[in-house]
Structures are given as structure tokens and as C-alpha cells.
Amino acid sequence: MLLCCMETIKDVFTTYRQGLNKLYEANETEAITLLSISEISNLSKAKIKAFPETELTKQQSERLSGILNQLQTGKPIQYILGKTEFYGLPFNVNPSVLIPRPETEELVEWVISTVGSEQFAVGSGQIVGRSILDIGTGSGCIAISLKKNLPNFNVSAMDISTDALKTAKENADLNQVVVDFIEADILNYKSDPDSYRGVNRKSEIIISNPPYVTLHDKTQMHINVNDFEPHTALFVPEDDPLIFYKAIADFATANLMENGLLFFEINESYGNDVVKLLEDKGFKNIELRKDMSGRDRMVKCLNR
Image (cartoon, rainbow, N blue to C red):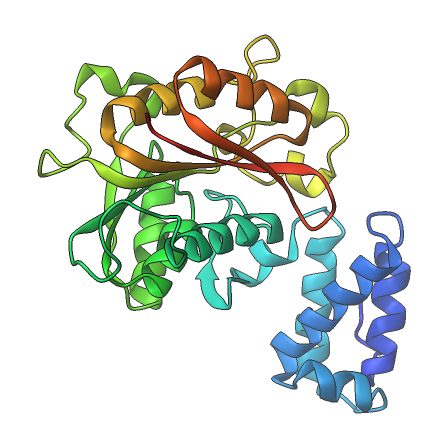
């Protein structure tokens, strides 16, 4: 669908609403349209809403038409624009990395608030040399956001994907932070358990948002996830949905300080299963937390 005859912001909203009504709910379409217009016109979202009769140039109309054509294939707006925002920071994204989600921001906030609380007993607040390891970093959104907000921590981030790590390194540069990126497969780390670190040093915090989507879950997912986001970062075998949690828990047992913290983002359907897994492996003070939508999505525990 072309927008070559469109003249105003109001026209764009009408055309996008008609063009995307089979793919998105009305509120999602409005948010996508608002983001597209803001990106192309350099107008603030407030101005776009306040002045819907603002006329657009022919070039702006053509660019918005091109974006709509891509959106109609199911391609996420973040991949089309090549960027998104996470925890108030800018991130480049592409099909080699997952698009950061709001619930992952809640996980980051949980880590930051825990570090700032008295209950976090490992080390002392401002000692240089404290360490965090992010497993399955993807775009680097977790590791970079933590480094930005906890600058006294040394932050490392692991991923199996060379392309994902390339994007994560670009995002670290973009946000002017130093993160140690490691290419490694957590499912096979035992072949070289010290390969992920230059110094034989245990981490104070290990955090991970690993793959956890089952094939059954896949049938319920939107086309823009199934057809465009990287499957290796999403899906797990139907008969072993906790495969990454088992591997990371085993890794943490050996590579997390005593009383160090392990944080997970989880599949809402497996909250109790993850808790039991961690109990069986000897972790303590296990806390299962709901996200803003009331779903079991995060776990925190202490190494024994």
C-alpha cells in the first residue's frame, strides 16, 4: 500500500491503521505509527499528537510508505528502523538479536535495586572489581544497562552468536561503557570452563534471559517474532524446556561466589519448575517474582 498521496500526519495514521489492522491491535498500530512518523519527521511524539494537520514533505511520505510496506510483511518496526530503546538507553537491533522487551527492563531494575539494598551482603558497595556476568547477552541490553547504572562493577557478557556479539559491542560503544564480551556456548562450557574469563575470577552476580520458548508456545506467537527474530535465541526443545536453566545453574554453582546472586528471566509457565530446579541444585533464598502484567517472569536466588 502506497502513501504517495498522503499530505498530513492525520492521513498517515489513517493509512497505517487500514494497512496494519490484520496484523496488530489498534493500540499497537497507533504506537508503531507514532514511532514511524517521529523517526522520519524528527518531530516529538507530543507534537505529532498535538498537530495532526501538519503536512509532510513528499520525501517523508515516500519513506513512511516504504516503512508501511515492510511492516505489512510482519517485520518489526525496531528492525526496520534498526534501533530501539531499553532502560532509557539507545540500542541498535537487527535480526541477529532479539528485540529487548519491557519485562527484561524489570529484571534489570531488580538487579540494580538489590545491589543498592542492605540485603546484598557480598562485597561492599563501592569496591572496584565487583563482577557481573550476563549469559546469552544478545544485543547486550542487560549487560550494558547494568554497567551504565553500576559503573563500579566489571561486567562480562557471553553469547554463542558472533553476529550478536558484534551488535552488542557496537551498543557498548554507543552507550560509552566497557563490557567484556565472550563468544562461548553455555551448553558446552565444561570443555573449557575458564575460557570465558581472562582471570580465574568468580562472579558476584550472574544474570540470564536464556531461550525458553517451547514449540507449543511458538504456535501462539505473532508473525513478527516467528518469522524475523533469531530462533536460536528463542526456542527450546519441547521435551527439555529448562535445558538452559539447568546448564546455567550448574555453571553458577561453580562460578558464582558464595552468597552470590543468580537472576533469571523465565517462561511464565515454568516458574515453579525453575524454583524446584534451583532448590534441587542447592540454591537458597529463592524468590519468584511477577512482572507488571502479573505473570511469573523472574527468579532470584543465592549461591550456597
